[in-house]
Image (cartoon, rainbow, N blue to C red; front, side):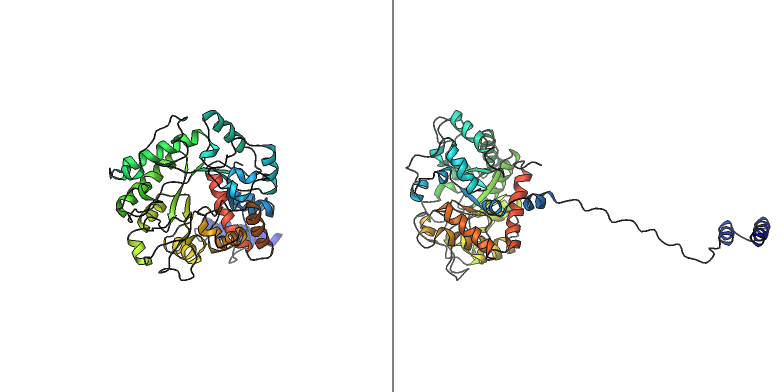
Length: 408
């Protein structure tokens, strides 16, 4: 102690004479001269949970599989034959029933697709849609084909007072971006009012084959650049109204001569040729942030030699659409009740093949029970990997959260 005191006296004297700094003096007294300070470790911050992944992790396997399917309401009639479910001439479901609710628990699908036979008038539609908003443990995509023109389930019903359009081709003829925007904004607004959250629109085909009857004036133009501008405008208008969009029919149905409702359609162009024409509206819609892209039952023998339609082709969905075009949203198949699929594949086989090819959602399988069980079995036996399943679920649940369908 005496020596330490003497040292302190010496240092004070040295400081008074200007020979020692205050830091050196402190070090001398404390005995830390020449030592390095030991850093204090700070605990790592707790990672913020990912709400999308947390939601996915809370689902049962059956609920996860169900998210991969969108079906007609009639799929929940226990006594309906598959042919009746998908027949536009058979009376449709116009109110949700206890029987349907029980079947939804068994097959917890991710969405419902409404058609003309499900829509009678504003009061009935409001009542039906109100029921659908609360029937599922995982809130539903509520979808409709409302392109404007001849494909419009609401506008073409005389009981509804909404704006009607002659055709999208007539809109495209204006070559006015604002006209395309107005279509999306107007249609999206009245769909939202009735409780829909996804419109299977706009049509992104290029009408290059005058013999094409399935597309025709549903496309904006025979000029790919005009079609691209109109698609971009329409998607923007839909989004500004709060409505999700779905470009269709990848990789382009406008140059085919066959209707895939009744058999295979074929596109003979090479990929390079498609990139100069058919891909322009899709790229423009992707740039505008489309939420869905619908894959058509079109074979592309000069792009993919496996003979599969694009809706079941890994080359078209994963390599081309995701890889080359950079699309990161939801891929949905065209309706799987079409003869282009049912003539060649079972509902289970078609669903699993399409999903593993890169589709996220299977639309309207011919048989819901078969498609659901096929997907469930494939998940359980590893044919569909957990990573592949999670990738699609992440896109689906992200979209539902983004648009407030799922709230936390």
